[in-house]
Length: 87
Image 1 (tube, rainbow, N blue to C red):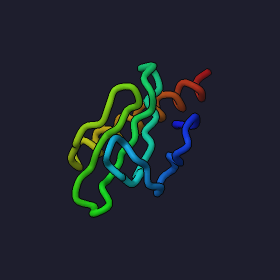
Image 2 (spheres, rainbow, N blue to C red):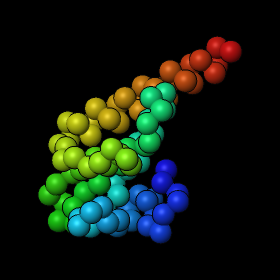
Image 3 (cartoon, one colour):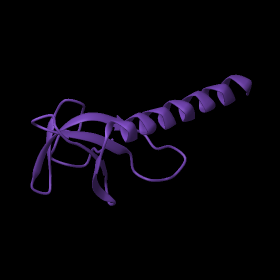
């Protein structure tokens, strides 16, 4: 989660990325790849989705890509939980 900023990056808040004002829809943790967390953002009209990764930039995405990001996150979390239970 982005913490060292004047903007609030929690779900539902409005952030500025470049010249865009976007609504934070979700924060997707990216454990294991040592990259910053990804954020799913949406324009105020609700017509376009974006993926923002700090230090990597912003890109337009569609619902299928959002689904894949969330599925990867869930899979990784379940794998970690299984390892913790087995230990």
